[in-house]
Length: 235
View 1 (cartoon, rainbow, N blue to C red):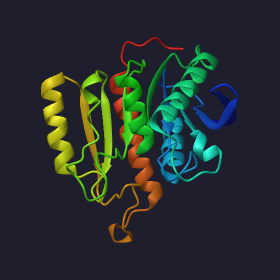
View 2 (cartoon, one colour):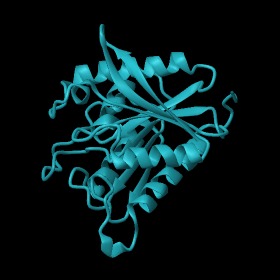
View 3 (tube, helix red, strand yellow):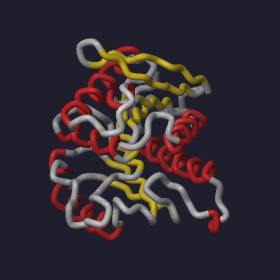
View 4 (tube, rainbow, N blue to C red):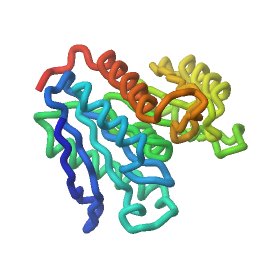
């Protein structure tokens, strides 16, 4: 595995930091681009753990910062700014690594995954979407669902959710996904991490380390990617 740091141009004159992890040998011709959640950055433990776990399994994985984090701000940018940043970063990776990584899955942790889903709903090309803790609703308000744009999504989706996530009631998510699949004939999969909170932190009483949890997530994502990629051309 080899890791590289980069400055990616976004907008007219800005850049954001990015990290890309290349496997020693690519198992599939698919890369994964992950954005961070609202309260962290590309160095969030779950993103680093999943990125390294995917690279060790033969999958190229990149992470990046949104502009507000680069500028040291706590509050996220408005959704259109987040979308523009994600779109510019994806375009840069596609152009720079076109031969090495011909296909991309996009997503991210919480806010990052939600932004990626808006891009795909608006027509951005992607092989699939990976959500690491999709923020289905505000904490304590499971009736205020953030799914109004899902009707525009036609690519396969992988949801990785913790059982203790206050931003995603699992019964509600299961119902929403069932209804969504019936209406749109879309492919989706839900992976549940026992004891995981919104950042997949698990209680010590479960006897698991966080590294083991991140390995489990990476294993699920890699397996899903392999199922998604048959027939794609190799680099």
